[in-house]
Length: 128
View (cartoon, helix red, strand yellow):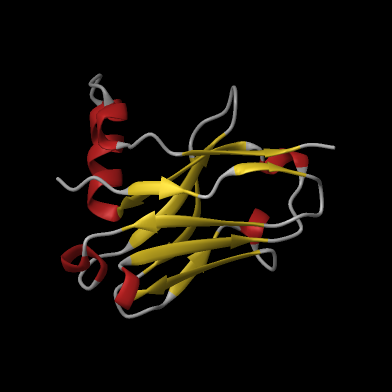
């Protein structure tokens, strides 16, 4: 299992922007899908955006047109550019590989602790 490290969160006004960064080992970035996920207070964790090794991306409906996922192989980093932020975007944002996400889901469904497959994340707070 690999541990990814998130950064870039903070406090921003509605309509503002933030860029999150995820440090990803090169061996993972070049071979696996990496995604951004978020969990707001009182809600389930949800997928935000995914980027595959070949650069193709997918987005949740609630961020289409506002967020952009990208990667910089030279810097071993996956980014999430967040524009037009809304209060409902407030959440802890984590990056993870598809493999670890599947492990987390399987653990949760079988009564185990799925949280061990997630890192600390970075807090995004959207408020006036």
